[in-house]
Length: 305
Image (cartoon, rainbow, N blue to C red):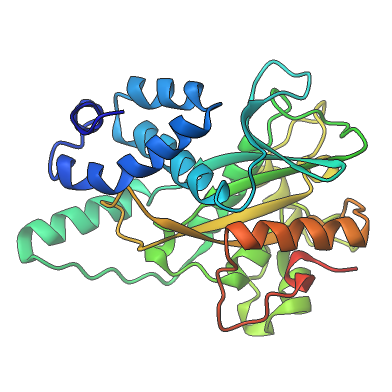
């Protein structure tokens, strides 16, 4: 791809300001994937993007694939599990196939409007957040929506590992931490297992939190209203093995070329052989480094048993 074409793609998707400057960082990654081969469908979707959200979702996939291929050469774009839809990526780790479905989660519209209004009036903005429930809800809903059985086989075949990856750089004003990830996936029990009790949030139930304890009426209401999985459909905790929470570096959302960091949280409801789990986590973090540099990278954050 030539620079002029990428600039035009950015402008067509609504990113006219600084289009050429943004394209310079992204273009080498696109050209690397073009030289590698197998990403033609991704480039087709990139060229067809007509609005910023869709375009930036494709850019996330370009950055992920470009960074991943530096360490692992067997990443495949758009793979199937015998369902109507395609899963974004498939990665072979010895005898196991790791499927990854991705999502870029943007700041909620209310916060975005506040930031834009204050910036236009004052040149700076100040946002006070005293309730993270909104973003936990959005995280959980996106995990559930991306785990659709239109793409994932609800009965995973032997040697298959399924993951949903969420880029959460922009939510909670960029302040999402490990405790938030643990809470969204495993609820308060997982937070208490690997974090501090001060990070628990009453009445929140994790997406993969199994009913091994009595739920309070408020927790039952959370499951019914927030998880909202139809009775005739399987629950994602029965076929999604974990969630990969991604952060961009640098975090400036205007930049199109960036590096990714990750927190990988395993679904404790599904059994995974310890040696397989350790290998997958270790190899993944070689390509997409662990986000919490000051903390241990050991796989207990992924939910050891």
